[in-house]
Length: 264
Image 1 (cartoon, one colour):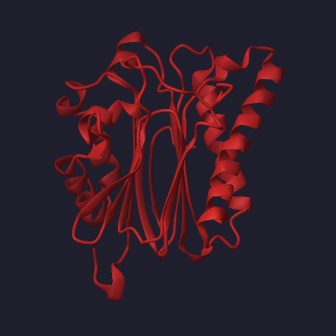
Image 2 (cartoon, rainbow, N blue to C red):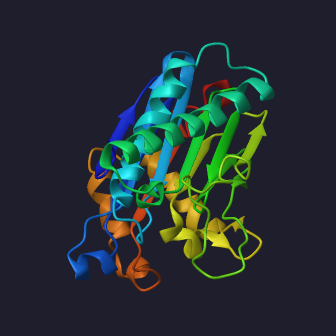
């Protein structure tokens, strides 16, 4: 489970990811409440799950961890034959539903209200043919396409109040879930929790901030054995700490080669 740092290689994808406690949690002696994990399945299917436990929830950290684990398990087990948009939508929404059901079961086990496990959840599925994402709550996912073109896949929902968001445990969460399908092979994918939103996106429109993302994609493509430490150092750097004290998660995935075999 991705509370710390991971680097994953496959024939198609290279994935670098990190979740670190924000400076606010460090000062308070609290752990990171973000969770993430990634799977690369046969035929080049990449699955990414990222969750942010609600700070107001007693078991927000546990909720985020269980949401990531259960959604990825569902998506991995149901991954055969994903080609058309409706198939992929059913697949990712099914992952969100599986996570919701897991939290409901845990709330019964713990004998607490479901809201005590509140978290957001963002799922991404990508192959050399398409990329799709489903999201409940804040955070964002961004795709890199030819000619350094960046496209927001999912974005933070617009809410009436600052720091207000929708959680997986909310009664209307599944009905309000975002879903996007791009029938084009991405060269790179970035997924973040809300801690990086102000740096990563042009708000309020939610468009990707190129000076933030493009260097990160180049870093992911070209970095070597010390990539774990470099990514952690970036997330803990003064540049980030000056802008946010929230927990931080960043997942970077790049295809190991572009079309026609040209290296990224």
